[in-house]
Length: 378
Image (cartoon, rainbow, N blue to C red; front, top):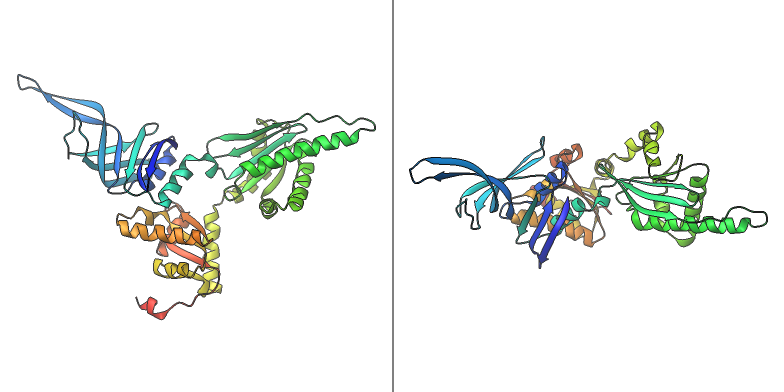
């Protein structure tokens, strides 16, 4: 998804987006709600009558602005159809006339809302920022050159290219070579900290010919302990050492086709949501007072600042009842403000369907909270 324009002031405003792939239509479906205003190009059948009384029908492309009344998403074709009344003057369509807009790939559309909440804004950031979807990172290196890359479903993005001249080993001058290597490794380390989001990335491939990769990892984790880079020590298990023929980007292809790497990636690409749901079920079985589900119970736990992880289905944010949607948004904001982790599940995934059977909202708590019998009766 590409963000063309964003004008939001005090919660109200509009954004102009371009869907670049079929999956972007799913993000658009989660953004558009009944009552919003949508502006896009469309094809309209127009009938004209001549002076002699004969009629002629033709199709014209025009730009319409409609007030959304109905939304239909075809999950198989990834097509979004939005029905509503025309609210702007148009030479082909009368004011108040119904029209169905089919959102198309690579055509901009403008969505206006009276109130943009935190969940909708987060959805835009997630759809438009490729680093939010890149769950695989790779560092391809050889002595003096390195590439730090992010691998998304559709492309490989080079986030940093590091080139350093390293003095050769000479008799009595090995120290210069070691200093040069350490300076090179430090630059890669800083690029890793700057460009890799470990909350999203589930696996980091470190590839090189020879022993460069092993020396770099040894240097990085020694520095992580020395400089107290907790994010690296906590995610040590995500780093995988692989052989490559060079430190250039094209070597990534041979790394990703390695059968042993593919087997490992199959595990890492398994969504973090599935693990969270498993943790919830384990907690429900072993310590029921630390596993709540249902919006009323989760709101009570959030008010006590007890929620460690909140699991929410994105289906709840598509509610046509504005007050209902606000209720879930307030719950998400409350948990985040109190340092809790929020995982928004896609209702198209199996884990999202399972969560939907538990009312669509569940929470793993930091400490046990007694469940009132009165709330059960309610």
